[in-house]
Image 1 (cartoon, helix red, strand yellow):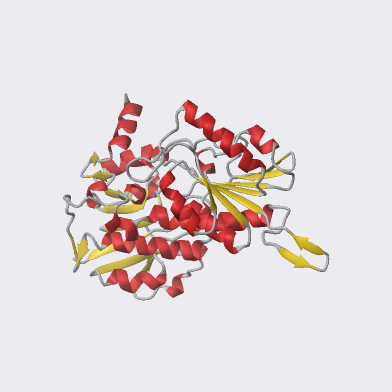
Image 2: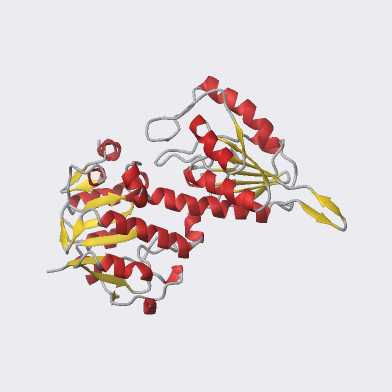
Length: 375
């Protein structure tokens, strides 16, 4: 029998993306698989069922129970997991720290789960890196939010009423989201500064035309992430950052740590030192926020400063976010699906990053978390 790939309709509120866009159907089919798409799976991404050609549109549980590979954006629901065949493969954002019960069910069903956020950040995995593709969407959208919510123009304007000076934007965190936010703020005409505890980002920041706010410490770790600062280092950082936050009309924070609370970068005192009409866009809101005053999912006004902590920002641009995510998943499947056959090479570093397989939780931090909950 041919390999059957099922594309699920998302069940989590506010999720507008889809795991496969119509333009990627032919490419995925070229791997030698049959594709079934759950009815209206792409509706919220502006991809109605009629655009999906040469696939089966299915409206009942058979789409899951008959599938060898299941693809979704977010973790499927309990009901969906219950329908999965033993030994099938699931590809999604698992967010294990939020879904321990679902992980246990995947383990019990002997589902091989590839959590796309666990794909190693190595050169050959760049085309699979869904974290980066979706972070790029978030950084772009954050800049538009900042420009929309601030009480000022972003660019310099010369008008009959006089010259309007450009806004100053501060981007905190120069990862993929931060770099995209820098580039977009620059395109919108703002003067941009950027801060990151990893000195290696300085060249990237400056290549985009922004000024790098340099901290006298380097907190980069293996894999390109930032480590937690010591108390002394954090005090130094706060003193430096406070001056630049106070001078900014728009601040975009991007320092998120998967599975852990977001680090606090902006205190209440820093907010109160900002000029009225300024704005903070906190992209780390899902982890509690980088700003002390952030309320996840809400827009608040604190003494004239707007603080917005949007959730699931990539889902706000579902067309392009879905297309990028679809390409990431196609490239991942290409590692183990060839000519209609599945071959999982556990010597491959990317394949070996699977969250679960054959009744085992392979990701040690997740295993420790779940075993800790059970004890």
